[in-house]
Length: 113
Image: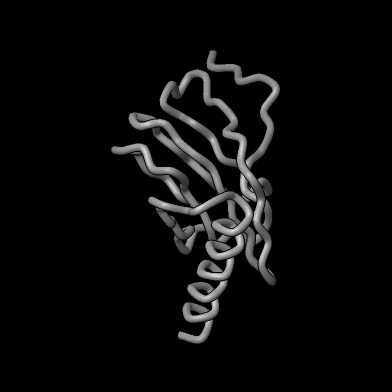
């Protein structure tokens, strides 16, 4: 329970810092990483900003709308204590996947045959 309260407080601090740094912060959508350390969602609407929070390190945020050609999403990194967050704007209709960079592996080639 203490860890959850700490995480929520961290997100609120990150949101406050982000809003002050980037403008008025109207229409900010907050997403918190699950127990597996990832966030995956479809953007059903455009918000002024999205705060993707609760990561152990700076996350890698991908637009996976085209699964064959994912695109790295640019964002402003926010660090509060032990947590990291990504503050960004996303287009309606996008499919987003975010995880700590250490969660990914690089594959040079896949031999399917």
